[in-house]
Length: 497
Image 1 (tube, rainbow, N blue to C red):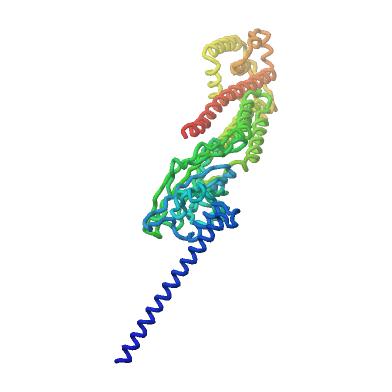
Image 2 (image 1 turned 60 degrees about the vertical axis):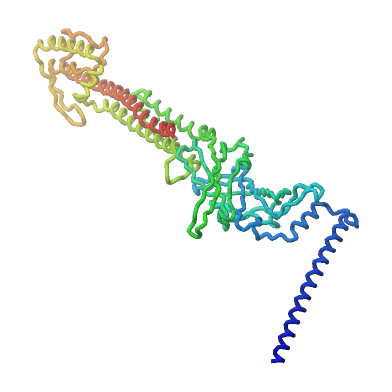
């Protein structure tokens, strides 16, 4: 027992001496630091350190025990308030096919670092310093809708630190983000592209992202000779919870509101198409007898197709909606095709005179109605008088054989009464000079079957020409009505946006 108690006493004394040695060592190190600090201050004050500035001294002092991995707050429950804003300098590209937006901007962040504050009077009135951003703690903010390959490829710039601990970090960045580009009203469209900033690892309890009106967005974009006009930049703060964590994660979303400058597209894409469409009306003013209506409409349609092939690459591809300009192109091609069909119909009617066919009865009635009721009654009375005067003569039957009519050999018998029936079918546009009175001399002349036959053919041919002219006028107004019914809804779609 005596030996065991002796050993315990020896151990107790050893621990005591060991603790005493540690205390002496720690006090010696503190004295050495104080001496080195005094020597450094004496050196700066005039013992050979005249080239050392207050800024250098300040940086050495504040970075001596600084930890870049620790949040810059002295209380663990205090979140770091980070204000975010952007400054837009240039819009590089808008890709409608891939739905991306690329711009050059400056990302500005401001927060307070409680470990980077000092008394300016101790350092010759120094109020602010610059330090590389990788030497202090910085927020781990990312753009959540970033679309480029290099996700975090940013320039390492300096931060501006004030004596009250406020830190300002401005990062120039070439940003490419996803943007839902709606080209339905191209080229008179407006777009809204967003940039969402969020902390990648810190929740809202540790890092709170805010937008402060005093720390506003800026627009340095010059729209001269550019496609887009930037109207403004708006900011909205959201708080969301994700599947990984129960804590809320705030984010600040910036929306760049842009309007496309459409002068280039109007002059190079809309104006030529409108001009081609208006030329299609000229086909209705060509004479029916010319036979050039179809050629003109085909030429216009080919010109429109070639023009559409040239501007097809300029049109933005989108699977969700058809641009108004694309609808206008489609409507123009449709109406030019309709004008071509109408030209074929009129030309077909005009060429029927070569067949020497008689105009159908219902078409003759339509022509009679369109010629006016008074005019039709007057012609009917004249023809009835001629019929009464000629039919009183004895009937002489003449026979003509082997006359080709409608491609077949026929035998027709002609008499004065038959000749008068053919005269009654004389075309509606008969001139006054041709309304000769039937005399005995004309009666004897009418006995010639060949003369009566030729006169009948001429009357049929004139009826087809009159019918083609009337149909051409009707189709012109139908074309105007169809054009209004097609193009007015397209323009109303743009007006109601």
